[in-house]
Image (cartoon, rainbow, N blue to C red; front, side, top):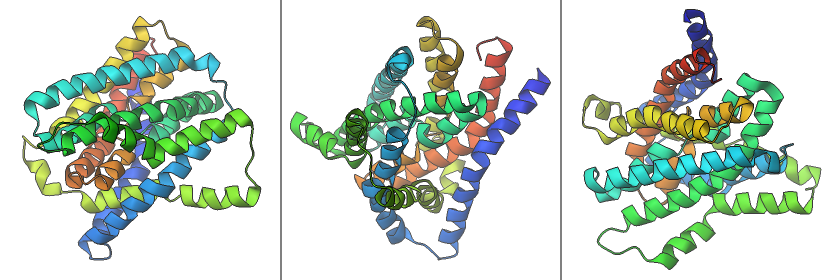
Length: 318
């Protein structure tokens, strides 16, 4: 078992350390005055409107996968996301200040499936894991973004009742959702972008992860981690424990096995998605809290992912 743990630990370190280095670099740039809050605000708008949508678009359009074969896994992922979302909303209603409820909820259910999740799946299962992880990301990201718009719209709409149509319009106009719907449409029509245009769009997409992590690192508030009651720390600890536990339970009860079950679990072992920071920043929420949640879970998931993978391997579930 100890050898399994060491192997799993190195596996997790190889995926998360590059992200941690970018976070630290962002903090360094901010502390040395090379970037500031205005830069992070502008960068968040760029990522939210262009870079992240482009990344999601091409991850779906260029994936070689069969959607129908993965319906049980996608259904399990949907059920797990909804369970986490509802549980988080209930807890937030009673224990979290209204402006921060949407941040808490995102921190519980929304994992970094597009980057860390796909990397986990590729390292675990090779090409099959890459394809399966891509279809999970492309499908579930749409749900994640719809839930994010709903919870953030409700929590940031202080002192007012949340109207249905404004929330619906926020969902319809969300660039990430538009990109996903457009990508599935392009796949359905078998349309192929000219190579020169695709190459230019790929360059924009490549900005998403490094730029997001730099800004998260720059916004990361180390002092707040010293407070035991800090919302970011509590949310992060709940994320790395509850999210994989729910995924394992749902997948097991639905009879998943093999690669689909492994992918479902690996996607829920990921830290909170950088896209959560981008959306909170763009919608005027507390970017410090969400940056801390992303930063903490990115570091902590290096350890917790190894522990979960070791236990699951020991019991023959992966």
